Image (cartoon, rainbow, N blue to C red):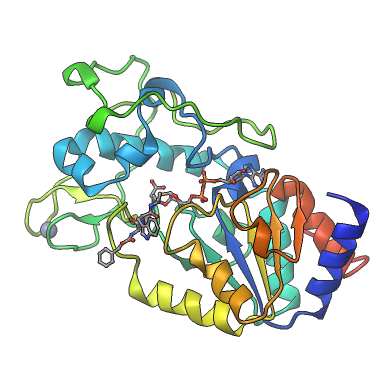
Length: 292
Ligand code: BJW
Ligand code: ZN
């Protein structure tokens, strides 16, 4: 990130009245929540998230998939919003027509001061029945077990999943990755029909919630700036949201330590971690502002 780029992005933000902030997993990396494509830790390092986040994986081994999501939910519970989340809240406070659209399934935007982000991929905190869709209560948080996990059927990864060799997370936060003693865990049964409860997230091959997707497309279509933060922009249809804004003439500003497929459509690329770049961006737009 250079001075002129930050100044230009700050000028665009200061001129905006209806910005969209579009976030991905990198937004929460400095809170210690691993990004989707980071290497996993502990038991889970043998699995590729892209192989676990599917309806087929849940059907084949509900305990494996439910255990992974429970471990991640406990990790998020221990995490705190970082200065990037608070900077997004500062933008929304200053510009009340801001729309925050997130692909994340954590609750760090809410806890960071954005009460109702548009959630494209659901939430770790909204489990539902896998058969009748009845919302299910969250299991109470179990204390971490002192024992290592039982080997689970030889625990072969599904679908030929390979040990995942992702990039290092940027930001160097204390990790709230699932712990080594997390493991497979039977999901609760639905109180209505007895079918296994599933995480309330959107898996590969599933439709995004239509109200959220419609709200996201509408906001991107009417925005006068789109700020994309911490996403690899590899997963569709979410990845098309910045393209909608760009196609209709809104400038796109990207915050990411590394290049992404969005680089080419961006008016400004700010290379760096969200927890540092976003507060700097708020201060560049409104000198003296409380950047969170
Ligand atoms: C930092 C940082 C720091 C690090 N600061 N930055 C068109 C083309 C090709 C394929 C498709 C297509 N349309 C649909 C598809 C198929 C598929 C898909 O996109 N596949 C691709 C992988 C090829 N899409 C789907 O299946 C979707 N459904 C669908 O299309 O349904 C059709 C249908 C219609 C009607 C009826 C029925 C069906 C569903 C997609 C669901 C995605 N779900 C997941 C899992 C959610 C639950 C969970 O978390 O387990 O959502 S996948 C995963 O990816 C998760 C994320 O939200 C999503 C995006 O990832 P994200 O956020 O970008 O994270 P990373 O890890 O990829 O990147 C992190 C970034 O942060 C990196 O760039 C780092 O550099 C950066 N970073 N530290 C700032 N400190
Ligand atoms: Zn049910």
